[in-house]
Image: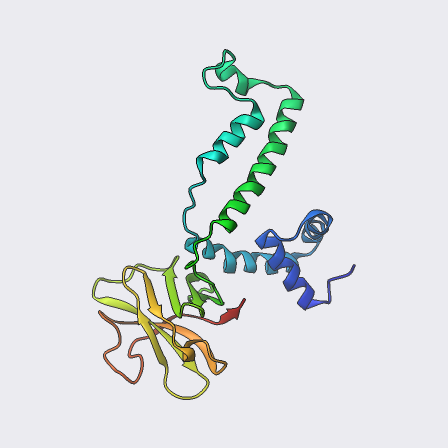
Length: 234
């Protein structure tokens, strides 16, 4: 397969590679292309920059005790066994292969547990946006949950905001006044999601640096734009 001139496919494969959904032979082929294609490496790096900050929204998940019990059972571990710490120094190849297989199985088990024990009111992300500064560095991540009418914003980089200033988030339409989506506090914010925040006429999402509490002008921002970006529909 020659993907050098297929830009849509190059973007798709790079995104799947970063997400970890590109598996087996397809992943190995892609890694081979990466060694030979500088532009493909740049595309992949851009997807890494876009997607990595989304991990900021992943909550902690505590696996049940049965997970550790399963690990002990599969590895034949017994508390207080005579082997003690020497068990972990065993250089037998079969042991390490077994450990690798068990680790893979447990990772799959944990994934199933996370998915099946997901709370009913967990966010259903419909849109994601990464906002960048003037150096094209990702500094803010937004998620929109249409089901629960919720918008969440979180700063993941950039310069420190002065105590007398606030970051104000806007949806800028193709025509008309910017629409205020909320003012961040402590570099994050959770807001109600209006329909016009994700409508088709939104040209860009922007963050301006405003006086403490947000723009004093009800008609729009008064400070400079510091971050901007666009929605990506999932």
